[in-house]
Length: 497
Image (cartoon, rainbow, N blue to C red; front, top):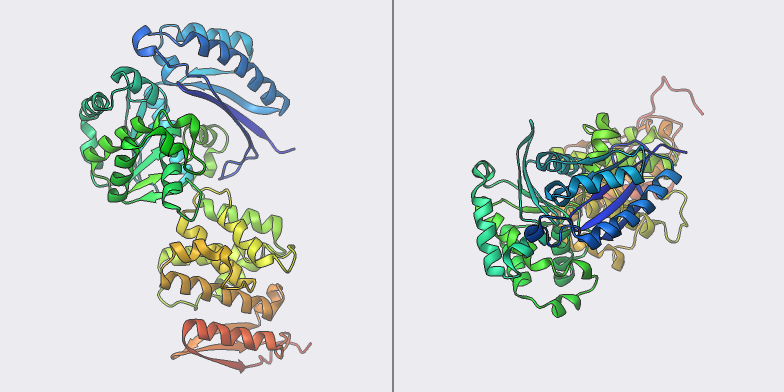
């Protein structure tokens, strides 16, 4: 059995246990359960944790403890955040937990520690993130500045959904004033003006889910869902003015979060007004994934998460761990003057190019498309998902009129679709030539001679007379809009078969 680790996120609104399996660049949750406790309800007026929530917490944590121990999770830790941190009876509550779960660390995070965990979670899920991270919970809003050099200027504000609702008495106009006052007191926010804004936390995720449903966005995936400023302003205005009944009517509406929606929209709107972000990016990875990267897999964070996922899928579903590198070199000429991002996508496609090898032939193309489109992997933004899905479906001869391809046609421009199709056709040609055997592909080359794309065969070991190879070269040329040519140039130094 692979190593397992577990963390409990004990927040002001809910408590969640996540059990991770293995040690890798991309955390793999194998158990994820949440219970709504509302520990922070009434904290603003009483200064204490909600009594009903405390009783529920003791029961839920006992269950979570039993599950984590039965699953042999080590390390296993409980992280308490704003409500426990700020309540007068917080220390007594933590002591009760420690007595009921002997040997289990129960840690009260400071506001800066909470922000830091969330920032590392964003770094885990969105490699290269550079801008402002905003993590909203039930009791607080954590703000932290992410740059290439590290994490800076962490601040915690009393703008969690439960606390803000209590402070304003449910009045949105008062909530706007309180939010502005708190945000205006953060002097370093001027340094992140015009940079991306990364949103973390259940209430912000609920905003994304509602917007995805309302706009019929073609991917029901919150992670990396991105809005421009105008779209986000329109969304927050709609959410502040919509009735609960109208929101409930949307497919997949997060019903348990609907009371928080107007306040989450207020906080986002006021924060956007202050920092004028370049874009808004939703991230599902936060405190829990940050804990995992800090405590379980710290040395893995610098790795490329997309390539890590692709290599793992290649090992599980493909037939060769050496062919992808050969394919990477062989397909290098397909698009002259590739950008670094385009090269990266093509490299990932090479690693994913054989993951449908064991699927039923009648469903292989569509299965591969959906497997990549819906992969649970950090680092895959929506454009990468639909580009790679299309490229690999083409590699398996997908029907281009298939309704399953709709997300790719909806989210990619004409040029991007053309590049994905060309990459897929090049991979299909490579497999027709080699049957997936790298030694055979190394007896061929694909290169430009002027405006003509030439497939040269340099080894007598290559089966050259197959019609599938000739058709594949023709299709690739048609996709690129160029002439192609077959050329045989046997090398005398290679033995005859």
